[in-house]
Length: 579
Image (cartoon, rainbow, N blue to C red):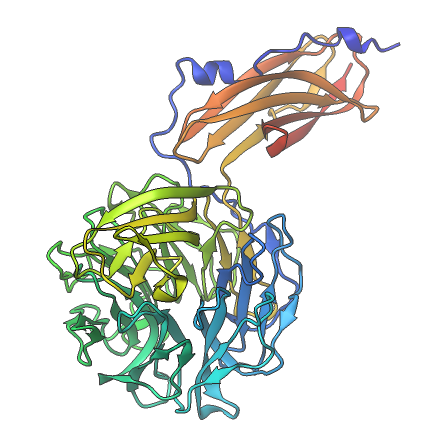
């Protein structure tokens, strides 16, 4: 009879003794995402706009997708987080109307404490040659969007993207719309619809002087003067910034990029790449239209309120580049670039102390038509409350940046010792700006929720492929099978495991190793509590002796990383015990 008590002497610490005593971890961790998505939706519409937001206020972020593009008239949809970080295969909610939807923007427009959704309509009902518009779906206050838009722009235009932001510094969200159709349409003027008492005006209160084919818009304090400015990403014309002066956005561009001169601009993202305290710009230059270079670019702030007009960073050639977002994937305080491509993969360019890699440090195994790349902590793995963050005021500055992003929610804003009602401030969760109706004389005090674990979604234009979700792998383990998996009785299994801690901080965990025996029962081989150093990537080895009395047959070697009672990751490989 097989005597389980005598099979092996358990090892107290399975692999990590060597790792913790004398082993050197990599200076920088690998990019913390699996190459394949953890979730793919079954709803295969022509997904374009995509964003995260806690629509039902249950403490878990939901996923909103706008479908249609220039292919079909389709619906706006919502996938509600199931309360455990996962999403259903098909949407829980769909709009009652259909349109050629472009991109979307999420925020509390009417100040009722519930998130609303604005979306561009690229084309009118008859397709190309028929102009679209912009529209807004209001939350009904129970966590459900209205089936039909509560607001639509009175004027018509081609628009692929829009962005909510505070144009006039009154603490509520106005709507900037990027206007233009570069394939066959004439250039047009970008516009802003002002928010008056929680309702957007149906006609623009601001037009750009320039006529462009603009495909994306982004708000940020680009010159560091304490007010939000507005940047547009264009096709057939360079990037432009419209600065805020005297409480409003100037109609004429105050900055124009010198190169590329005639890009096929797709998406723009703002953030401080080099930690100089000023906002930098990245954008994607598609190569479908003439003049596009097929690369990603960054324009860096000069630290004096301006930006270099030539790119300070240029990626490798990629081709039909699309979505791009600046975010800190490692949690090391430096914003990296997550990017996409039409008919291609997701790429990540790592930020090493303020310098972005020119070649991708991560490439997904997926092949799809990537549109949007929203970021959030979908599984609440790294939620973090920040209490008592204080920033100085000067009586002029109304725009501040949270020290940590992205923002899940804001619990408290104090200005000069008095609480500020939610109706008098607004913020952007992704880029992390806060805009106040009144400028603090001495200080602003903030309590908010952020995360150290950024997940990202992908909206896919290809209707044969669903949307994706990639969870951040905070810690992983890989069980590497030996070259020969036939282990004779009386010899040893050469077990190898690779441990990775992608976070920037040491993580206390429990390591467990087991054998699954031929009768399918589990036999514990050892466990121990250890602390994995931050940015650890370590391959450890141990030989496990197989006694001569062990049963022959199929085994499985299993290694698991736990945090408390929660399994962080587990991996295994089979092997055979032979005579």
